Amino acid sequence: MIDIAWIRQRPDELKESLVRRHIDPSIVDTLVALDEDRRSKRTLAEDKRAEQKALGREIATLEGDERISALERATRLSEDVATLTSDADALDDEFMAAFAPLPNPPHESVPMGRGEEDNVEISRFGEPTSFDFEPKDHLELGTGIIDAERGAKVSGARFAYLLGDAVMMEFALVRFALDRLSAAGFTPVVPPVLVREEALFGTGFFPDDDNQVYQIPGDDLYLVGTSEVPLAAYHGDEIFVEEDLPLRYAGFSTCFRREAGAAGRDTRGILRVHQFDKVEMFSFCHPDRSWEEHEFLFSQEEALIQELGIPYRVVNVCTGDLGASAAKKYDVEAWMPAQGKFREITSCSNTTDYQSRRLKIRYKGEKGNRLVHTLNGTAVAIGRMLIAIMENNQRSDGTVAVPEALVPYTGFEVFAG
RNA sequence: GGAGAGGUGGCCGAGCGGUCGAAGGCGCUCGCCUGCUAAGCGAGUAGGGGGUUAAUAAGCCUCCUCGAGGGUUCAAAUCCCUCCCUCUCCGCCA
Image (cartoon, rainbow, N blue to C red):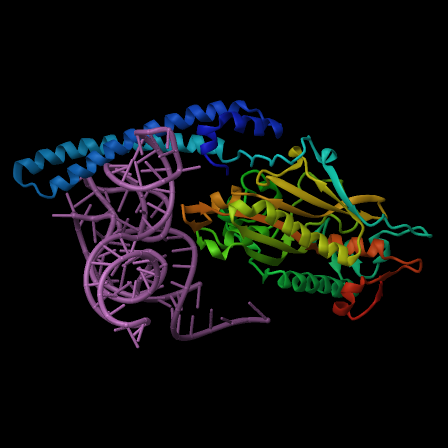
């Protein structure tokens, strides 16, 4: 959720930011009018309520006829307060329903664009891997350690079993990421993956993306698509001491995504599945320093991929491809030899105060309590990283070389499907 | 799953229908005092919304919040209902 002050003080600026995101800016005029309306209604209701409270106090001191006539007046007042209040509430609801979905204004450095194709490449690392043989894809390489067929039998499409060395690789990657991130000041966390609706609303996934989320109907719980959700909500409704910022966490969790609307896309292998594990960075940071923090998180992200030796490029995600909560986002796209393409493998966002406002996460500063900024970035998305490693490090005999940095964690240097 | 107890400010804890956003204590902040420290004295110390203002400076006015949401009442922290959470005992369990 954005700051209401935008509506009141800088409506034109807000319109511009909506235009950049290809959203009809006329909503702003509606909201300005609605906002004035609701405030004047609220004032009316509050004045009447103040009157009621004053009379109530008086009644306590009255006796006899005086009391009786005061009670009569109070009854009428009470009715007035009830109607005025419910009118004001209705206007508030109407306003919030239109206001809450407004997306975070993009940072000035975010490129204009409609969709993924307009993201702007800003850097590259390494060279796309070349082979003197026909490279295989991860399924061919992992016939015995990635079982998508039985995954489908048991759970349906987009589910897979990981076995044997693939599992060892997963835990090696997790431990590798956690070790590096701990050293950089991140606290490792294993969060709950089943959360209440408020956590999803607070992080901006609801109401916009609710069709991507698995629900547990009997218990009013939802399976998270990323540990960003429980990590952000972890400090919900809290007020930090300014000196404690930034607070950095590295969450490990399974992630569940319905992938609604992705039917037919990336159906082969484990690139796009309903369930995968991921190490995610999350930071609660001082609002004046969130852009530095964004670069910092991203540098951690790059350091991990570089150490694993995967060729990649970085894109600055354009306005049309940015989620509602992000003011800016970098995606890392790893080179996928079997596809001959760069594919998204991690992403790193500054959501500024969009989440903290909804989740009420503040710090106590000299000028009073202010909202913190929150940021998130993928450290390692296991499935996709596994694909990148297998496909880039494959050898002509169908085996895969373990990246040097991972060998201390796997205990083996080569594996085969 | 069964039985019981409870959720009040940074913390402890009183209040059980009106003058209570809330006694008292601890902690913290500022000041005073004191060779230093400790002790002592005085003042202050929840969050949020709206209004006033050039101002998300101070101040002032006002509303909301005593786990959440409903209800009763002229009036609710206090009474009733639902839900959430915590604790104790029993059962079950990785």
